[in-house]
Length: 99
Image 1 (tube, rainbow, N blue to C red):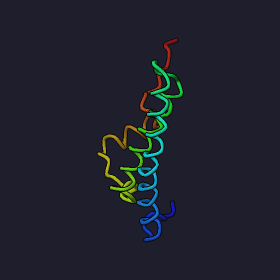
Image 2 (cartoon, rainbow, N blue to C red):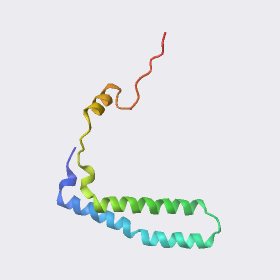
Image 3 (cartoon, rainbow, N blue to C red):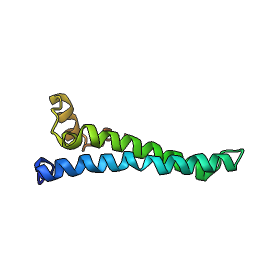
């Protein structure tokens, strides 16, 4: 797997994408407020736009603050590594019917 996230350009680009996602919340918020004023009930479009706002805020903050650290390898306990190999990585063991 290439280590593109270790390059300085990628580090800056990930953080800039995070800033752009956070900046996109202003027009999204304005559109959501306008949609809410037009309708007494919550419409599917309002729910979708609210979900998009949440996703942009979450992803933007994650990329801005963590950036390339999101791809750092993590150590996994040996017992979980063995388990993943034994059952094929699906998290469930095969059940073989009797007979």
